[in-house]
Length: 265
Image 1: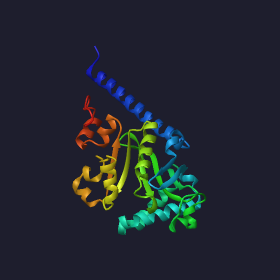
Image 2: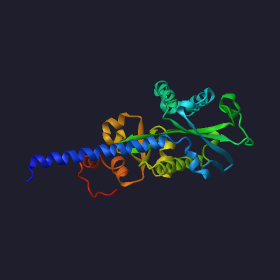
Image 3: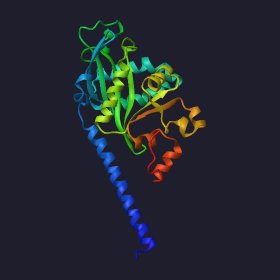
Image 4: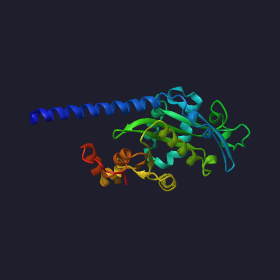
C-alpha cells in the first residue's frame, strides 16, 4: 500500500506539472497573439467609421516601427489630452509614456481621416499629418499576463477633440474586445486617472467595465485613497472574472485551489 508521504509527493508532482502546463499555455497564447502583424485584418467591417459627421479609417502599427512623425504626434496628443489630468505628476509620467510608446510589444490602431474630410485648423499642422492622411487619434494596446490570466491591456485611447463625442471611442473599444476574444485572452484591462471623470463614466457606465480586484482601491482602501488611478476590467470567462473582478478573498482561495465549482457573479 502506498505510504502517505509517497502519495503526497505524487500529488505535488501532478500539481507542479499542471501549473507548468498552464503557464506554458498562457505564454503560448500571448506569443501567438503578439505575433499577428495586423489584428485589423480579421475585422474588415471595423476598418472604417462613418457616423455622426466623422469619416475615418483605421490602420495597424507597432511600437518598434513608428516613424519620427508618428512619435511626435503621439507625444503631442498625449500632452494635450493628459497633462491636465496628471497635474504635477505629468513630467515623470510623460517620460514613462515615451518609453512605453516605442516598446516592441506595443500594438497600435491609428485613426486617420479620409482625404476629403473637412479639417480643422489644428489638424492641419504638419506634425499631425504624420506621413499620411491626417491622424485623429490612436489606441495603444498590448497582450500581457495579469494574475495568471492573458489579457489585452489598453495603455492609451487618445482622440483629437474633433473626433470626440461621436461614438468613435466606443467603436474602438468594441474592436479591442473583439481582438481580445479572437486571440483567446480572458479580459480587457486599462488604467484611468480618477480626475478623468468623463473617462471613468465612459468605461464604467457606457461600456460596463468594473474596478478590478487588483486596483489599489480594492487591494487596500487606505493605499487606494492615495493613488491617483483605478484599474478597470471587463472579463470574458469565469476564471478571468474570479481572478480579476472578484474579491481578494476569492482570488486567494482560487490560488489555493479551494474554489472548485465557484461561478462568476
